[in-house]
Image 1 (cartoon, rainbow, N blue to C red):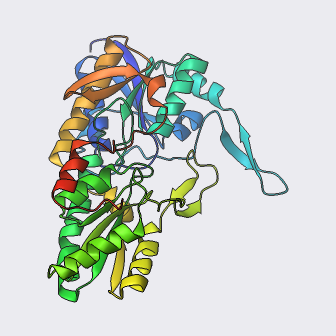
Image 2: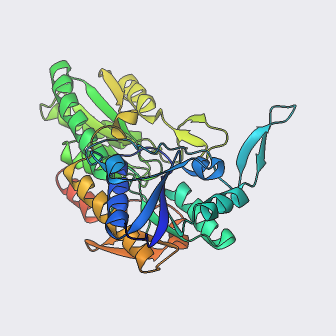
Length: 366
């Protein structure tokens, strides 16, 4: 048996996302084919702190391509630099810096590079590990929201967009049959990529984005115009981060200990309540929620995930550390990971797809 060239590890952090297993598969197969050992870290950064990891072989990597979720498990709460270790007498969470344990566990397994598959929170932690602890990292951009800077597409977005589009196709029949206004609230946090693309693909009449604060009168005018033109129903796609002109985002709840404690939700219900009150038209909202995260990834996401996973191992083999693989002009490149952990990438309000939507009569609430 030939001697292994070295050892790397892979973890999945943050929310689950279609395509995670496809990346794990590509990372693992590329490492093994090139003579390296590969460890899978359990439950994100928690596994690095608790030393929960297993050596991956082709057996563990078999059958992962079409599977949703992540076989490694994930969490969006465990930050090694601010790890919850208990509560004080008043119920306040006590945090401790566990980064030394992370470094020790990596060294004990002779891991030369950590491949982090995650969104802005996980990649921010990866950047900190590289800067403060001298850990070699390579990031892979993951989020259904498609809001990471320096990459044109994150894997998982295409699957989420397809799910939202299918939901709109189904809502159309109910809206038309009952002469209703039907709103679909989709995920995306502070970026409107899912709402925009699914709204265009699903034939929405109004698309409300976080990047364009909406005026309720503009929406009402569109609904009334359609009714005057013989259309007794309307379809609205609303991003969870959308807000009215001069108003605030709608917060569903706060999650203590999470990298992003603010959880958005509820704007769709507020919207349809106001529409029904002001027009008398029966109006309903469907919140797509976690259905956007689950299930088997689309063919596009499987291919993109595979390209990203292979490129991450190539970056390791080329000693191109502390980077993130990214898609630019349909080519896979690497960018410094410290650049990525910045502000989210929103939809440009002057983008050609918004312009196309306006030309075909879609109302964006302004």
